[in-house]
Length: 116
Length: 112
Image: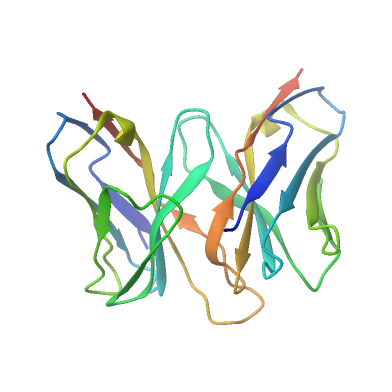
């Protein structure tokens, strides 16, 4: 299993441009998440999905959109990029079935985005 | 909304000493409390977790305690080693792992 794969790893955007960060997982996890991590800071939840066709806002959703058309993929769209969106973005997945051994987040390697 | 506070933000210890990181959470519905370790430039990885029906859990040199009444939980690392140097994040979630919210992190330095 490759786990959680994110692309691209690095990207520089100009203010006002748009882009999509791709995330795919091959672990058949039902839950997927997008977090951002600013330098020296913790992880802030942007959006999450509990299954195909279902998404919801996290702590910091403004300026982003997501979709979940399949179990495997959870792309994050940035519209009209702003310098405040400069950050490292982590996609994660987890398997929740109500049992005692679920809940661990499996992270991708991260995507470093700079908006100039 | 949910909030997780973590202290201290930086912790420096001598090799062999113990390190303690403390967190508080706001949502009384939280029932799953994982701890993640993030090495420089890497992704966070789970090191230990605890559920609300347990007060303490231990795995070799690391242990976590939970006080549901006070909404406190702590990470204890004993016999610290230089390779323990990293950023540690506490987190809390409802539904056993659903919608996990993270603390701001603690940067641990272990001096040889």
